[in-house]
Image 1 (cartoon, rainbow, N blue to C red):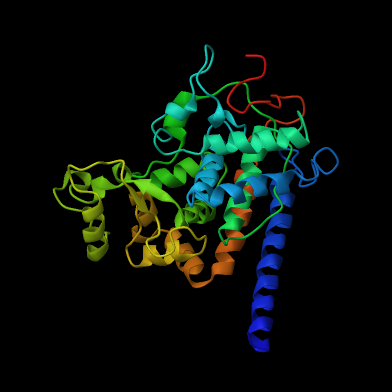
Image 2: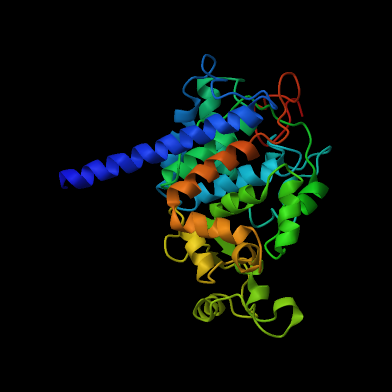
Length: 340
C-alpha cells in the first residue's frame, strides 16, 4: 500500500475518532447528568466489562451475521418502553406480561440467548455488578463498531427494572407502516428530535425485516390497489419476487441490498434512489417539504457526519429514563426478576 494512501487512511480514522469524541462530550454535557450515567461507572468494579461483551459478540458473529443488527435493535426497543431498563428482556411470569409478545417485538426481536451468554460471561468476571440494561447499551455500541460503524464511550450506571410494560410496547415503538408525522411524534415523546429520528433510523443500514413489515407497500398500498408510488420500480419487482402476495410473510429481506451486514451510510443513498425497505424508512426522504430530507442528503454525502450524529443520538437515546442509584436492581438472570 502506498505511503500517501496510508496517510489518507490514518487521517480519515483520526477525523472519525475526533468527531465521535466531540459527540460524546456534547452529549454528556446535555444529558449525562440527567440520568447520573458515566463512562467510568465500572472502572473499579468491572473494568473489563466492555471487552467481555465485545468478545462474546465477536465469537457469535462468526456464525450469525445478523447478531449485530439484532443487538442494536434490542437496545432501541428497550429504551422506547419506560426507558433503558432491560424490561424488554423479561419473560412472562405470574406477575409480568412480557414485552417480547408485543406486536412490534414478536418475530422482530431475536438473540436473547446471546444476551444470556454475555450476562453469564460478565457474571463470571464480576458477579452481581453489571446490569442487563448496561449490557444492552454496551452490546449496541460493540455491534455497530464491529460492523464498521463508529465507536463511542457508552455512558453506564443503569439498573434493571422489576416490571415490563406490554401495553406501552404496543403503542410507543415506531411501526414500519407509520408516516413521518407519527414517527416524529413518537421520537419527540422520548425527548428525541428530528435529527435523532433520521440518525437512529440509519441503524437500518444493516439487518433484515420480514415480508410482513413491508408487503403492504408492494401490492395494495393504503388500499389503493397499487404499490407504494415512492418505491423504485426495479426494487419493487425484486421485493415482489421475494415476497409473493400470498407467500410466506416471515421470509427476510435485507434493509440494505448492497452492504447488508456493514454499518455505513448506504441506507441514506438507498432512500435517495427510492429503495428504502420500510414505509417508515422512505418517509424520511419522500415526504414533500419535510425537514428530514436535508438531513438524509447530508448523511448520504458524508459518512463521518452520519457517524457523528448516530453516536450522539445513541448516547441521548441510552439516557432515556434510566433507573439509577437504589432504584431497580441488578438482575442475575436477565430473563427474570431476582427472587422470582
